[in-house]
Amino acid sequence: MPLRLPRLILAAAGGYLLGTVPSADIASRLAKGGVVDLRSSGSRNPGGVNALRLLGNTAGRAVIGADVGKGYAACACGRLAGGDLGAHVAGVAAVAGHCYPVWIRFRGGKGVATSFGQCLYTFPAFALGELVVALAVTRAPWLRQRGLAATGAGATAWLAASVVWWKRGLPNSWGPTPTVALPLANAATVLVVASAFARALVRRDPDDLSAEP
Image: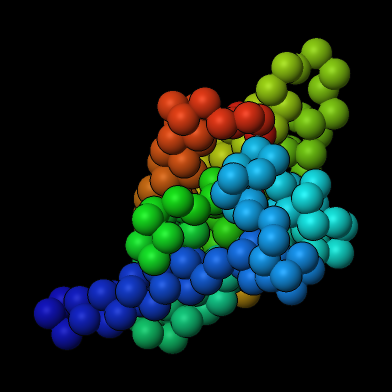
């Protein structure tokens, strides 16, 4: 374990650094010359949905793709550094880095897209299932806060499925073999994302309960 700990610390540090890459800010500079500040415009969330609204479809989709990519790449690098456990540690750290980037006074996004990148790498067997659940909920016309409901439903399904995969030892495609680390890491990520939503609510941001990544 003493020899493994530095590798896990490296995985966590690398994952966090990747998570802090300001995808939305870079897109804003490229698309609008930096004139549009996503942290003070629209929903004031530096995520893909706000970018779609303010920067256009191309830039918005690029931000979402980049944020998903950050989570996926962090897990891949974490696995190289610390094995399967390193992948889980790096994935959680990437989401934390996206939501709370130290370079920007911890004012990041909500981590939805980055957490999906984590799911896509560490739990590919259920990645499509999580996406289907979330999209199905957004179609419910009676819900007032569809974004929040979709995020909550997707996270709940993700966490529940990870317990089932761990307990039953089900195949996980290219992802790490399911162990107790899978539901523990997923639970940690859900808490980080929930805290980001709670932060938005406390600040009373416009659209503060939207599922912006």
